[in-house]
Length: 399
Image (cartoon, rainbow, N blue to C red; front, side, top):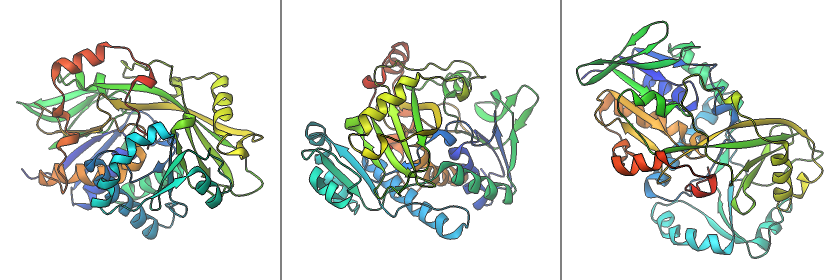
């Protein structure tokens, strides 16, 4: 079936990247519907950190391509920079390292470079970092980060230049069908018809898909990130996924530091309303100071830092910790991209490419079965959705 008209639901980086890649493939009419302002849901609240060194072959292969695209965009676009100058560091206790070390042969086979560093070696290389000597660092020399506001603005500009129709303030409430096929969407104001629909929505995936009888075993958790005022000196170190400290730290624009904090004992955030907004979320001020107490053990510069901004958002995990990416079961013409743990920003460039290929060609360069929305059985999905879990009980996946 020739595809000439596509609707993309969700104006975050996943939706924008999908629209961008669809336009690159010659789809003539693309409409992107965003219920709020473009990029102002999860995307602007992201850390933008990314590493190749994930936990599955499919994940590693997608990240390899994602970072190739970031480097390409950084070279071609004059308003976006991918910061790979320091790579990315993943930090482990000895106990946690026993679970990651068996993946090193996978990285070797897929030609992904890495270094294994002791705590002392980390400090010698980057004096700004002070982990215990018995911690283990898995260093990704090709990892890095994007500044979310910069990347979103650059991507929006390209999407508009390519003729994508972007409609803000349009909440999709349901789907139009032609027989067994999804043929469009409904908002409160009107219906939109298309050859294919791509759903990239984040927090409200479950209520949106419920109309079609599609249930996915997804949980959402509140997440906080904080940015300091400008520091006296640049932070000369890579972004660090610092699970032993329940957070992460990276350099930020203008000699600032960005700190992310998880709340392991906080229960999931259930989202059952179409009018849910990230701005509805709140977190106690004590979370920031607890995060500082933890993370300053790794980054002493945080000890006396003053804070300039705070963002509270949601991260999203499936029951097995892997994303959802592919055509919806029992709903031909609908494609879903959702639940990218805390790494949706780092996946987004390749997700756009993969989704565009699935829509236009009916296939992609990568076997996406491990990410398929069809991989979950109904009974376990139902049980998982009925349960209430704390963040510490979810599959822990970082960037």
